[in-house]
Length: 223
Ligand code: NYM
Ligand code: MG
Image (cartoon, rainbow, N blue to C red; front, side, top):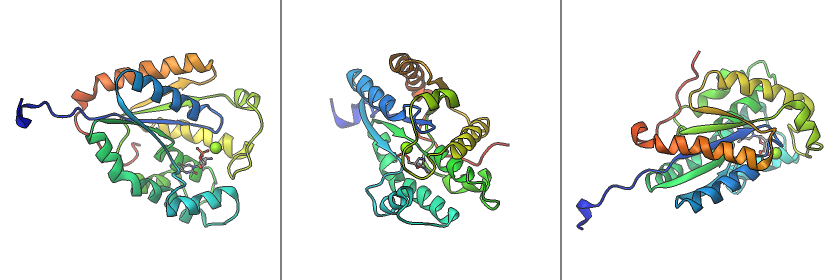
């Protein structure tokens, strides 16, 4: 077969996993990566913030509390941390790699808006995300406040307290009413049950990729 006769590479899927701290995102991302690899997919697992880049290092010291930043400024750094990886995301997807992304623009908008800064609304927070690669599916791992409490205490990082988590929960709900491609997963079930629910949702998404066409970009929030 000559090069021109080869079927073009089928693009990968951009799969985002979102949720509150302790919702089980990282474990589920790993289970999904292993499952998709076993199914023969070329798959990569990445996470935001990516703390390894120069911008990521600034974010890391902010989250650990060793540096302070203006709310808007740190918000834009979280967004810049996605923009600096946008090209490589597009290239991976075009090369047929399915990307599993642990947190994305949705965390970006809701955690910043949860600070209740009068000049940092959810709509303001969404603006710098416009134009980034749009997930083909966003799996929202939903847990109740009670279930979250059962899973143990908060970590030592900024935002890991009851007031922030309650606001973040409400804002995720508000944001997801204004988004397409969001699949709410009941993360209060067992690890295996949640994993099976995620696999089923991702299978549907992957099966529809040909009709969806090329990777899209995030647009303004719907009203
Ligand atoms: N976070 C994460 C933000 O505030 N904005 C963002 O854009 C992203 C991606 O960082 N509490 C917050 C949410 C988390 C914290 O994430 C670190 P993780 O997944 O706990 O390492
Ligand atoms: Mg965390």
